[in-house]
Every structure is written in structure tokens, then in C-alpha cells.
Amino acid sequence: NAGVTQTPKFQVLKTGQSMTLQCAQDMNHNSMYWYRQDPGMGLRLIYYSASEGTTDKGEVPNGYNVSRLNKREFSLRLESAAPSQTSVYFCASSEVNVGGPGANVLTFGAGSRLTVL
Amino acid sequence: AQSVTQPDIHITVSEGASLELRCNYSYGATPYLFWYVQSPGQGLQLLLKYFSGDTLVQGIKGFEAEFKRSQSSFNLRKPSVHWSDAAEYFCAVGGTNKLIFGTGTLLAVQP
Image 1 (cartoon, each protein chain N blue to C red):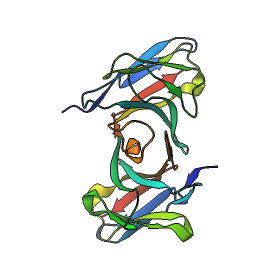
Image 2: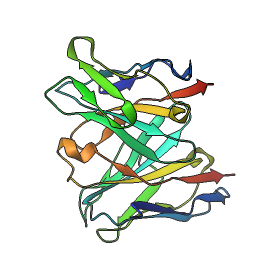
Image 3: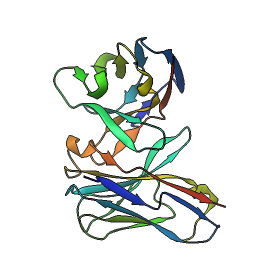
Image 4: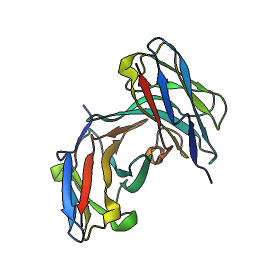
């Protein structure tokens, strides 16, 4: 019962480099999310996927792309990393499709700490 | 605009003492309200949720929260804090397609 698994846990990039954060869930959840967490700002939604094959922008999507590869996997890509993207990134999933209160009952991964120099 | 305010950035309590963490929200419709907890180096875990009905909700680890519509508040309480409760606590309000999180309250527990 792994839940939500994120890789890598830590990454250091130089400005302009690209990378992909991987996320997989084994709970057969429909919806998946990417958040970033910054000191004093709580968690902010980057992108979400209500179901396999769909993705939508959240609060802070600029500089990111996502792919919902299948029902289990939802990746986040930084095409050209910037120091402002230094953050802790969390992937989450929910059983209920977006649109109902149950969609807000999220299971989180342990996080990926990204530093951009 | 929808928002969540947690006015206390840091709180320190003694083990065995009672705890109340404050949360105020701004939301146009009936809110769905949540408290999540984050232990160091971990992801967030759901403590409790309010969708409708009884305004006093019970959660895991002995926590409870009370929804007060007139005060736009959803404060988290625990009658006796344990050292293992040291963590960061996030209040959140749920909308149609996303959660809006507060900035968190970091709880320290003194022996």
C-alpha cells in the first residue's frame, strides 16, 4: 500500500535545465494534482487532472507542463528551470472526480525538493 | 475572493496542555472545510473534514474542529497535546476543483 510515490526526492538544477518530476498512485484514484509549497505561502495548485486524458491549469501554471500518462501516473515537467521554481513539490490524488466535496480529500506524496541555482 | 487565513504562524504549547489553532475563511458558497497536518519531511495527511451537518467534527489523533458560519471560522482543537503532535497544520477550504490552503501554523510542543 504505497499510496502516492514521487521521484526524485531531491534535485538540484542549474538555471535553464529541464527535468520531469514523476508521480504514481496505486489507489485507483481518478483525480491527480501537483502543488508547490513555499515558506509563508502554503500550498498552491500548479495543475490538476480530473481523469485520465484531461489536464487543467491551477493557480500557478506558468513555467510548467504536465502529462497524465495513464490513470496511475501524472508527471510535472520544467522545460527551462528558473530560481523562482525552487520549491517543494507535492503530488496528490483523490478518489472522487473533481466537482464534488470528496475531491478535496487528498492523499499526498512525500514531496520532491527542487533547488534551481 | 476565496481565501483562508491562519493568523498564528508559530505556536508553542506544553505537553498535556490544550490546543486551539485558528482558521478563518472567505468563500461565497457553503464551504467544504479541512484540516491537514504535515510532519517534518512528509506530505500532508487529512486530520478532519466538514461537508455539512453537525458543526463539530471529530478527526484522527484526538483532534476536533468546529464550524462557525457566523464567524467564518473553523478552529482546530485538542484537549491534551502530545509531543508527537509537533507538526505544521494547514486549514483549507474546498471549491469545485481545488483546495485553497492557508499558510500554515507550526506547532511546537514543550516537554
